[in-house]
Image 1 (spheres, rainbow, N blue to C red):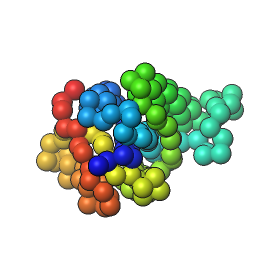
Image 2 (image 1 turned 135 degrees about the vertical axis):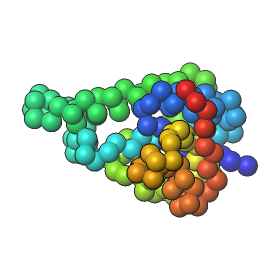
Image 3 (image 1 turned 135 degrees about the horizontal axis):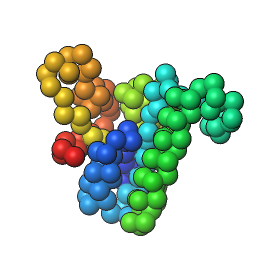
Length: 150
């Protein structure tokens, strides 16, 4: 049975639905939950300097805003799961979502990855391929994709 579950969120409104799905299908006594949010490196502050300084805010406003949103999203996700009785931890990682999700799942020896799905048109999908499809192809474990519309 699945005991280590990696939950990949992106901060969109869909993220809350993913957390709701996990809290319905997992049990606090049986599952260790790990929440992951990958921050695009184009909008990321240095890994070793997650504290946002006045310099960062003035010189890198987009990265500072992205980091603040990521920090807030992660804290809300962890709090949501903990209030439902789960032991959980969160991890913000700068990098490509696909490689970050796959690497984190391997590092944690995850039994299952849970993530969302963007509902794109065929043209949009050609221009910006599906992250969930790529993770399914590369993950060494089952992937549950929550494809509900928000």
